[in-house]
Image (cartoon, rainbow, N blue to C red; front, side):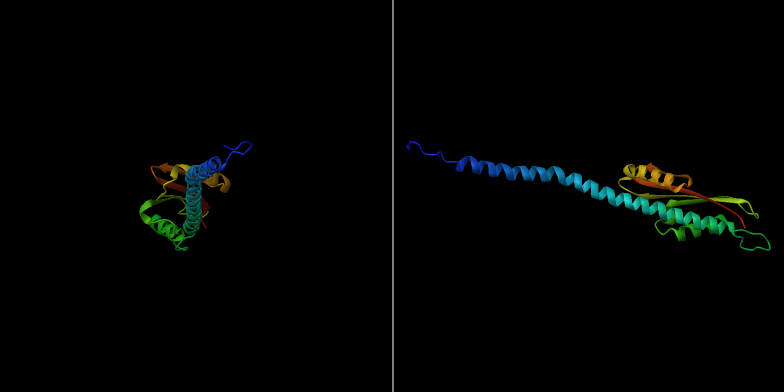
Length: 165
């Protein structure tokens, strides 16, 4: 044996390097699911915001269409089916299967008319996005607006009101 020799550090250093690689793998395994959840959550949240904006635009177009008489001399106004068609053509995000449109009021000059639209679409993160829909409804100041979660579907409802011409 060597007296005064420095002991070799090759074994412990090599061991530390292997542990570092394992810790990097562990950190990656812990971080990637959280990152993936955040990315997919952002995507589905933006889809829900787009759905809400699309439906709001459709409801506003529908209430404008409902407030204008089809025959001003006879005083006839569009039917609920005509209004529903107008709403769906203005909000391209939804199909006619998942939407219901209800029109109340109007049918005479200077009366308030309301169009309520409720549409359902598939969203795997419906529960997470539900709070965003409620927040957007409050920020937009739309009456009776909100979102309701039904399984993995998200239902967006909007009501718009105008005066008949």
